[in-house]
Length: 114
Length: 111
Image: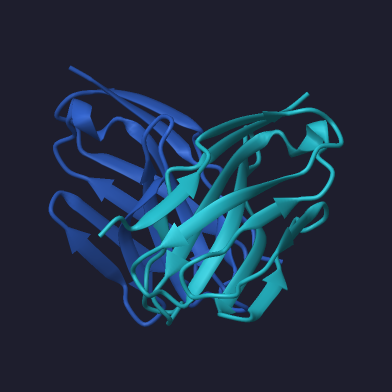
């Protein structure tokens, strides 16, 4: 049982490049979310999904796209990377009921955009 | 809009002290309050979740309380140890599947 896995762990991009951050979970959790963590800003929600085929925007969605074709995977796409997207990105999952179920976080992806 | 605040941003204490970490939130219409721990370069690990109908939760040396009327939650750490050194974050869930995080408090427990 691997829990929540994220790849890559580190990535350096040039401005304008695109890439996909991968998130996978083997806990059969319905809820999945992407956060970014910046110094002095805390964690901010980018996008989230309440189940396969369903996604919605969080607090800071601009510049990011997501899709949820399976329960297990929730990739985050940067279409045209900008220096402002330099951050640590965390994927999180939750069983089903946000009122009672805690979130499980992946180890994070550290992204630098030059 | 829900805002979650943690003060102070950092705390350094000698080993063995009993600690109280504070978390305040602006919207009392909160469904639950969660406490997380984050070690350097790692993801977040859930410590305790308090539902709005509960007043406290306990796990080992940790005890978390929730007072919705005052907009406050506290995390109590008994007999602190160097291994407790980490950043502690609280987060409030106010509906719409969105968890709002505080900026965290960096705790250092000195041997």
